[in-house]
Length: 380
Ligand code: SOE
View 1 (cartoon, rainbow, N blue to C red):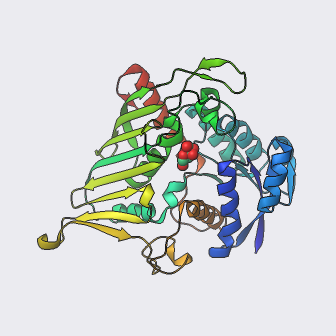
View 2: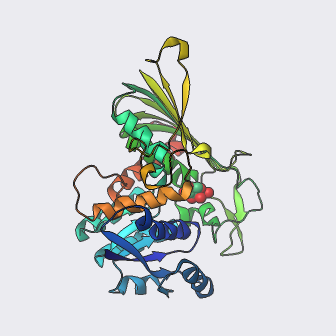
C-alpha cells in the first residue's frame, strides 16, 4: 500500500475524531493509500506529547509552520480553531500539501474564497469535514432523494439544538470555549451548527437561493479567558431562518445552544410529493420513511434500521453484520475513505465536500447573519 503521511494540527475533540478516522480507515476499507499518523502539532508541548503518544504519532511539532515545511508530510489536517484555518490552509496548499480542514472552512466567505483559490492554484486535493454526510442513514436519504422516489420536493426542515452555553458564568475564549469568541469562531451557532445542516441540505436538495433570518445573543457579556476581562459577546447564541432552494422547495432551519435538555439534537425532515423522510442524530442508524404508494391499510411511517450489508445501505457492508450499529466516529472514517479513494483518480461524483463546496455553505451562513441584522430577505 502507498503511504499518505498526515500531519494533524490540534489535539482537541476534532483532533481525536480525525486521528481515529486515519487509524481505522484502512483496516475496514480497501484503498490504495494508507494514512500514516506522521506528525501531531499543537502549542502546548506537554499535552501534545501525551496526545501523540496515545494515538501513535511518529513525531510532533509545536509550530504549524514548521510542520508545513517538513518534506515527510503529504497532507495537513486542520483541527484547530476557526481563526487558524485560513492561514494554515493557504500555507499548506502553497507548499503543495493536501489539506483536510475542519468545518466551517473560513470564518466568512472572504476567507473561504482565499482558501479555495489557494487550493485551486496549488491543485491540491482538499476536503472539509462536514462529517454528518457520511452517516449511513444520511447517505441513504441522499440516495433515496436522488433516485427520484420522493418526487418533487416541497419542504426541508432542519434543527441543531444544544444546551451547553446557558450558564452565564461560562467564559468565552480558550479551549473548546473559543466557539463563544466571535474573533476565533467567526459566528456562533450559524457557523458551528447550522453550517452542518446547510451542508447536508444542499448536498441532498441542491443550492439555497435566498434566506431570511432571526438571530439572538442571549448572554451579552462574558469573561474572556485570554484577557481576564468581561467582554461583549459577538456570537449568535440562537438562529432561525427560512430559506428557498433553487429547486423551488421551502425550508426552515433552527439552531440554538439554549434548548435545555438537548445535547446535539440534529434532525432533518424532507417532504416530497410521493414520500417523506426524517432523521435524528440521537438515533442515527434509523431513517423514517413514509411512502404514499404503500397499500392504504398498512400505510404509515416505516423505521428503517440502516444496517444492511448487501450494498443498499451505504458503508454498512464494511463493518459488522446486519443489525449491528456503528456510531458518530465512523462518519469521519467514511470521510477519510472517500478522500483516499479520490486520490486513486477514480471518476464519478465526489462524495465529500471540497473547499469549493464549503465556500457555498459559508455564503449561505453569511447571508443568514446579514439577514439577522438587516431583518430583510437576503439572496445568497
Ligand atoms: C459544538 O458543540 C459541536 O462540537 C460542533 O463544533 C460540532 O461541529 C458538532 O458536530 C457538535 O457540536
